[in-house]
Length: 192
Image (cartoon, rainbow, N blue to C red; front, side):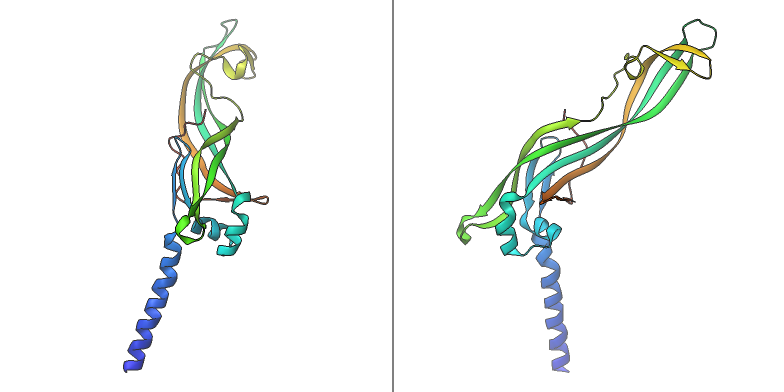
């Protein structure tokens, strides 16, 4: 009976040790500033690396921030001849943004320069695909569009723009592989 209880306790402790070994990893990222910290455990888990692999590959590991914002755009359309009643047109647009993220390897000097993780130092080059319309703008950059329903050219003006969704976050990159990091919120996003 003592052996069975001792075995159960040992099994429980081993299970606890396995469960908590991954808990040492940490991602703390501020999406408004592009700063934070990524613990070594999250990078190791992402690429299935042991400590030696992390030590070897840390210098070639990079981070990016990718997000896709969705907006509901409302436009007021009126015919140029005044033949048809004006109408309100609402549609969604998506505006992807991609940013490099500056990072430095963080070492623990007490342990012969053992890597602790990566200090995330801010957004680098930002590439935005598309533009977010502004109230008062003409539709899609054109003052006039052809309304097939009305059968004539119309004047269109943006009357409302509302951001409804953001998807994405921080990614770790190595040798052509890109993996999402946990706990990297996308709201609010201030990459401009």
